[in-house]
Length: 137
Image 1: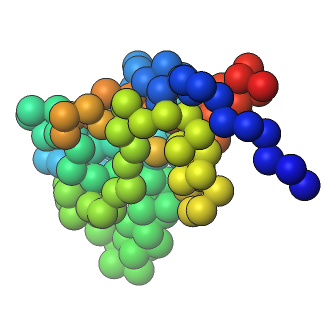
Image 2: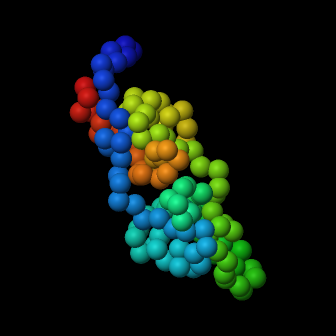
């Protein structure tokens, strides 16, 4: 199969990312964070500090671990920081969309937080990248 020729100036991640995100804070009560994910019908949310820097991600899978553990101990509680995933793969807002597609192909992720100058500015999903590529060719 022949690969299409690269576009001269492919669009940037920032051109297709979602900017209006639900975010959590590290000190937020885990039960409140779980309710936000459930009510918003979202699979996870970025966790940001007071300066808007990404410090982790809390997923429904992380929350399921909390619920599973609580079922044994009959005790709920704690903060988002205790349960979030701290190591997060990200994309830069100025990366080109073709590089983003490669990141999705090379890894298991369905979405990436997008950073600019170390601050969270959006999120891009496989859907967003596919849409961009379909418009490009």
